[in-house]
Image 1 (spheres, chains in turn purple, orange):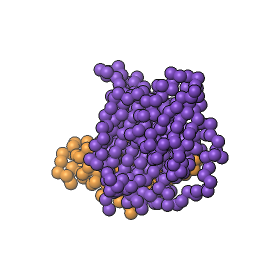
Image 2 (cartoon, one colour; image 1 turned 180 degrees about the horizontal axis):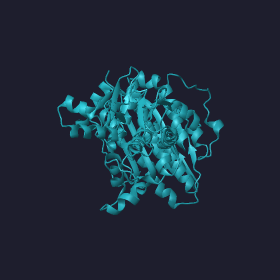
Image 3 (spheres, each protein chain N blue to C red; image 1 turned 30 degrees about the vertical axis):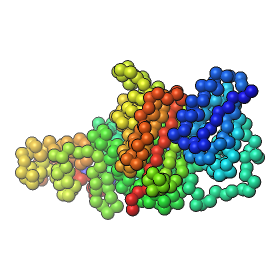
Length: 301
Length: 195
């Protein structure tokens, strides 16, 4: 008998919890083979892809080596390939890579809406290379579809650099980033760009704990995220530290974007007027590290 | 006599000190490496020198890097950790200026950014009571406390304090000059066009 993790039809930030919630059951049955079943997935975004990789890492570190049942939808499968999921997943899941190739090779079109395929972040050089890559590709997506001028592109790349460098700087682990452009027809009637950044590291609560926990009434993940995002908190005493995330928040606020941070058992962030989904939650199932989602809308011309 | 300005190109320092070929000042680690390279250069310069850090050809500067290569550098310059030296930034784009400004404001610091057309811009925070004085020094290139007192209609003590405070912030150069009739006085000079 195997133990199966069922993936929802839509795999994004909103449904990430359904995967995390299934982990407890899996861990109780150590020894049974684990299968992650993607067969019903009809849509997956960078958060979903990165989430799946993080779940894979989490299980791998726990001694599991889960198999994947690939999505029935060819579109989803192709998208996962296009976002370099399989390239990054080969260590975590026993993949027969020949089987994951589509019958007809599908080339990465220059008109693709992928701004950045899944990239692993292990050190500072990875941040340099993804910054360079996004700057080079910016014209295709950020200028054409998001109507960003040169200054806005710089601000976008700076924000990306800040959220990604937190991984080698603070998480004590590796992480991933992925970026994709979408058209948000129903919610916004505009193009948007989605950035997902994740790691399985020590999380914000543990990172800030030595400095802030002693003076906190009830030191929690929610309090730690709130301090980092809204108060510029840093584990260092230098007043110049802790500014990265604060400046990213200011940018997202100015551009009417959405920013959420999940760490440990909590999630909070910035909600724009066009998305009123519940942001502040402190009773999630514990999951290590930090998971960040940023959505930035097209700018008014 | 003022020393000649020395110019250091940040792209050259990046080429020499980083192994990744990047032209973007991103990540705190990169900032620390480049700041240390700048510090080594500054320390080798003569006392009284003005050093121009030329950012031409640099892509983006993120906030963490700006804190290292601007805010930390200026904070140490102001306490004379590098001796009696002065710094000017040049070749900055508007978005680079914006991020450097954010890093300076956090530590209540300021620096001068030199534009290609020879004009200048103050980045960061400067007490408003010093701003007019700075503009006067920049405009006239040279100013004594007596001249400032006459121009601004203030007591010479007050004029002297303003100029001295600007010098402490390394925004104007202070040189001792010999008066024609004998005796000495301090002359305050603009950082720009002094070579």
